[in-house]
Image 1 (cartoon, rainbow, N blue to C red):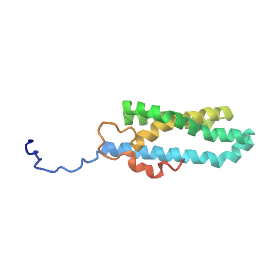
Image 2 (tube, one colour):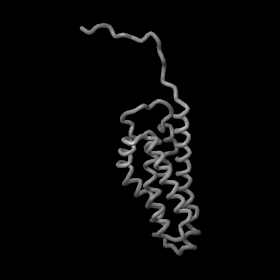
Image 3 (cartoon, one colour):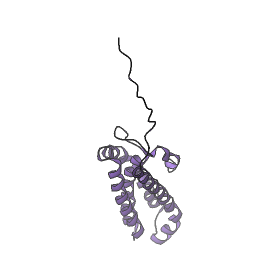
Image 4 (tube, rainbow, N blue to C red):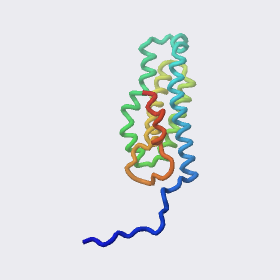
Amino acid sequence: MAGPIAQSSHNAGPPRATAYAWLVFALSFGLLISDYMARQVLNAVFPMLKAEWSLSDSQLGLLSGIVAVMVGLLTFPLSLAADRWGRVRSLTLMAILWSLATLLCAVASGFHEMLIGRALVGVGEPLLQEPARGGGQSGGDHRGPRGGHLGLGGRAEI
């Protein structure tokens, strides 16, 4: 028979979040909001892009859909990579890639440049979304705020 289970004399309660964890949360949340707004603004400027660049409806659809295609193809492999690299490194890499891709979209002078920029935005998004939402939680220190509560608006883009 097993002996009695030793119990701790004090109940420490749940671990407290550190200032660093809150900073990572705030930056993740800000990036998710910026990402969502950037997705929405493209649809608002479709009429202007169509007129200025003489785009067809198919080309406009491709500009809009390429991000979803890239996210769909890359979410799983990049989530595995983010699990190995760590969430903070992954978020940092995404922030740089996503920001540069968004800047490329802003200075694009034609359809092909915009398409490349939008594809790169789609490469950066999985590296933001999964670590920020707490994806790939197979191990490590999970104290403090995580992305689970960011899911409130996270699936709104679908």
